Image (cartoon, rainbow, N blue to C red; front, side, top):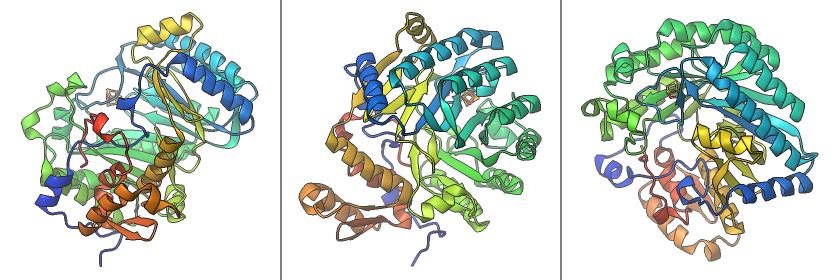
Length: 454
Ligand code: SF4
């Protein structure tokens, strides 16, 4: 019998059947089914209700800082290319005005258990802008003493002085973009970042007292070979980050035209791509890291590993966490808020975002109001994606007859085990956990997902 740390054998036929375009389920229902009919007014109503009905419940705050100095050709994020931090002055001003509007609607509800600055590159901001933005958050929200305060870092553009400032302000977690350390792969994706730069930043962060330090790696990039990837994994293991995210590269040039610059012929695909994930799995679990959720690994003493062992792991758009609040308020372009069962996404364009805020309005452009049924399915999908286990409850046979039938097919393929109303995802099913979760997705036909299962 295979254990959690054994990487299961995947046949070519199974891979061909299951490696189809499928959502990552960072939300449910997923973004492609959201519409403009839930816009600014829907979000305003959700914020007012959330403030009135749960004035003491903590919030998660996400701030999107979209600027980067250059566009990496593999990038799948919503970024704005700019050379000088002066370009961010107007944007930081708009963020602060947006916070004023949202805080006003939330009334007394201001406690925050999680803050996340993502991008783009948050440290594109200079120290004056970083301090100004943080002060604005603290003046409008009450960041709890044990809050998780995280920032995404690009080692190439981040100075020691910026990191020290972030730490002094209260940031205590960080996630670093690494992707791959091989020079040929880096050249193919137009992102050159030496091992020394990565190591220096990690050591500085540790000295300053950051915890839960995460590296983002990507498998499936052009020119990655088992040999080059093994070297990258060895170099990463030598640095021993607390957490590692090993994402499958999503090649989606139809939505990210910058990916058209990639040497497509050099992309590993199918079993060759999966082999890269297996190498990562073996490397990290072989050194005692625990596999977390779909594609993360954490040292056993890390809080994510402890939470998963208790089946208490949760996640939101910013990733896995143990401190996810029930509601997320997001600021900045393309930011996604999730308040009281309403998803609300801001404008993707800098101009449309800044124009709306300048007029004293929120910049929401689309969203979704979840029904009770959506909320029920979302809870099941989250359990499957985070903890690989869910109890569908006493009425499972009545409510999910069709789903149970399809789960029995997955059981025959070795992906899940069903015992009464309880569902466990097997080690093989972990590789295809998005396929398992999709059984409970009532909108799958309408979703047009772009990235594949592996
Ligand atoms: S630094 Fe990160 S966000 Fe910016 S372009 Fe590169 S991959 Fe995208």
